[in-house]
Length: 285
Image (cartoon, rainbow, N blue to C red; front, side, top):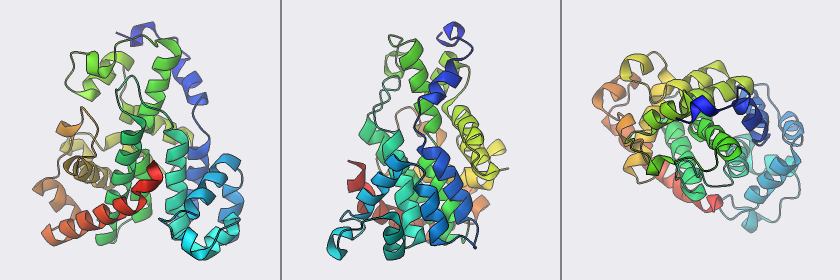
């Protein structure tokens, strides 16, 4: 068992090695929930992280956004003026994912590309679900992107302190969550929620990430957690889930009834998510 041999400061030191992008994104999420937010304020925020700003401009100039057809975008203010706040918000989330998920999770046996595409699909699926329900679609989008950030932390702990330990694929565990508990005395969901709390994400988003994979009895107390659970089920059904997680998702009648997601709305959300995923997927290369 890995946890017994870890130093008390292991998680804190590992967190220091993660990119700064999510901290900026946390502030952006708060700003996007405020109707008084303007372009200048968003541009000033994003400029605080030069690496993130550069990635946002690259994405904004990509074919997926129409940048190549409309001419090169030179700075963040121009990007915001040309494509709008909502689109830049999506682009910023993708840029943070690219910046953070820059390597495979070796302890999990999850490749970099699969991790990124899973985050993207869950984000657009959660956004689509909340859009058809007239819910908090921007929060849902962020939750889909961030659901696995705790696993970035746990994988970094392994790299720093036990690089030769047994990976999930070489372990006897069929469940990813059981393997995490045995090795770290926590789960990716709990670790991710703790990170998001430290980064000052909205409390509702922290709780959603923490409970997205919880049993229905617990998850039903947190509406956005149920949205993330349904989004993860969509990702799994579309072939973009993560190994060891399939048994966690309950895209069933009870979950849909809890959300008010009837058959027509569920179909529309799925079709919308598939369309958005294909649009943005090339940026995850």
